[in-house]
Image (cartoon, rainbow, N blue to C red; front, side, top):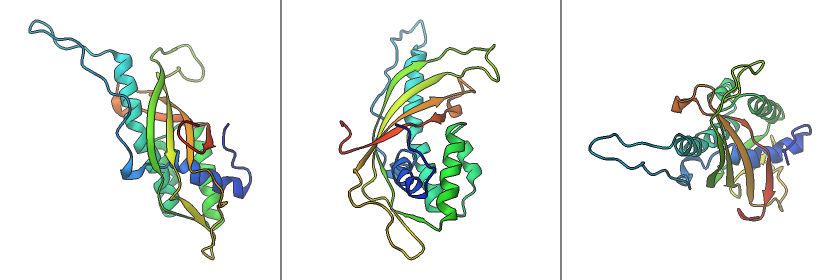
Length: 203
């Protein structure tokens, strides 16, 4: 289910979970779980790569950057929210900006980083719809990511934790990663990030 951020406590829980999915495995993120292999080649023809496989690999490789950027924004209250647009587009960029703004306005502080455990591409759709309004549908890869948030906490102004002691250790998110600038590999952004708390990456 999508984590809601209407209540402050819900925002805090989302922060320490989504910030894992959104936050990164920071520098500790594992390598993407899916790799691509070059297509067959010969001396007479250049090697060929399946565009779908390449898109999957690029989207998965982008997830740690997305997660780390969100984490950074929670950890550093002076960092501009505009940095969100380097890794996300609406509606996810708007949702995250609201959550981070609420978190900061309450005087909360994140302590510790989350860790991206796995990221796997589930599906890919490279079609576009130039006739779509208001903008064309962008190439999309859906990625399932599992994030360990055990080390992530949030404290109030007095330094007291505001996270339930029994919070599940993991967050499993289903990220919709789009690329309006495809085939530019630097154009991937997260547009949606519904997620759920879990006791393990498998559950």
